[in-house]
Structure formats: C-alpha cells, structure tokens
Amino acid sequence: MLPGKSLLDQFLGPDAMKKVQGMAGGLSGNQKSLATGAAAGGLVALLMSGGKPKKLIKNAVKLGGVALVGGLAYKAYSDWQAGKQPQAAAAGDAPPALPKPEGTVFLPADAGAAEALSLKLVRAMVAAAKADGHVTSAERRKIAAQLPELGLGAEAEALIAEELDAPLDVGRVAALASTPEEAAEIYAASLLVVDPEAPAERGYLAMLAARLKLDPKLVQHLHANAEALVEL
Image (tube, rainbow, N blue to C red; front, side, top):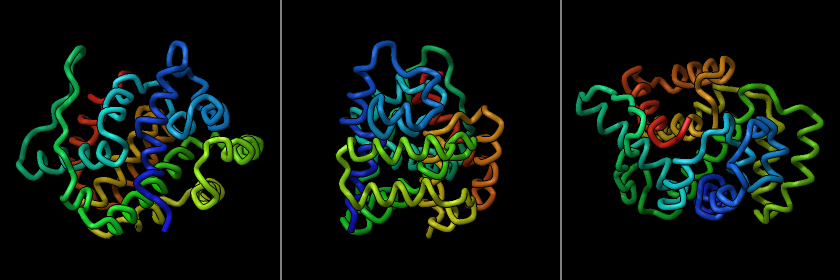
C-alpha cells in the first residue's frame, strides 16, 4: 500500500511547508501554475491556489497534514452537531484550536484505515487543484518532469499523475467517501487547496458539497474554520 499519511504530509506537512517558508516573500500569484508551484517548494506549492498559506503553513508545520485536515473536519463536524452557529474569523483573531483527531473516525487508530483515508484525501486534493481548468497539456508535461525531484517515490508519482490525467469528475471524488465524516474530510481537504471565492472553484465546491450530501450548515462551519487557518 502507498504511504498515504506520509504522502499527505508532503502536501500539507512540515517538510513541504518549511520549503514554502523559505521562499522570499511567500508564494505569489504564480501558484496558479501547478508547474511553477512544483518547482517552488513541494506539493503544497504545487497544489495550493490563491497565494494564501501563511497561517496555514504555521498550523501544518505544527500538526502535519493528516492531523490538520482531520482536526479541521472534526471541529466543524462537532460544532455542527452541537448546533453552534458558524463564526467567521475577524482580522487579527488567532486561528481556531483544532481538536486532535487521532483515534477518532477522522484519523483512525488502525494504521491501514488511516493510510486508506489519507490516500482518499490526496486524491481529492489533486482533483480540487484542477477545478479552475488551468492545468494545460504543457503544464502537465512540466509537472511530469518535476515530480521525480520531489522524492515521493514511483508509486506516489504514479498516483498523482493518474489523478492529474483523469477527467475532473465531482461524482468520482464524492464516491471516495464511505461515511459522513469522511465526506466532511474530503471537502475540507479540497477546500484547503482552492480559492473558494474564484468562480470555477466556488462552483466545484458547491457541486462537491451536493454530491457528498453535506448539510449547508456543516459546509459553513468548514469554510469558517478553514478561513481562520489561512491569511487571505
């Protein structure tokens, strides 16, 4: 089995984020190019769009990718179940304290289940990164040339290449979820790599939420917590 947890940490984990931190001035609008992002600093730069990762970097360095996505979904899901109202973060607010998902359905204690979940989240993130349609055939060729430089291993490279080449299919991504909690995590992972205000990506998220059968209030909680983790 592919090392899903470590692969997800290549997207949102300490090593990838430290590379991004080393970039002068942070990430620019060139993040919209997956090829430019790959050259700039790991898979997080390859996938993230919108030039917004400063607070997210700090949280991912602290938590690691799997715990970050799981904690985000766990908090949103718990607040939604408790009937709380989504609260948008004000400027200068500290990011929300995320609960530890380890040992819950959001990050199972069983190693095999955790790996399987992590790979689902990686697939969802790659699909979301294509939502604005900017991955041209020329960029795809550049990505293929640069993936080996990231040191992921042949299986991981093949998985990413497969997802990049696959037609964008919201239904296929939604079908990855086998539980309501996984549905929330898949949405959370997708949300972290797109600009939710861009029209194409906003449309993709709306379709994904519908296919995942997420309650609109839960979606609002996911957005509010994710927005608090990034610096727009």
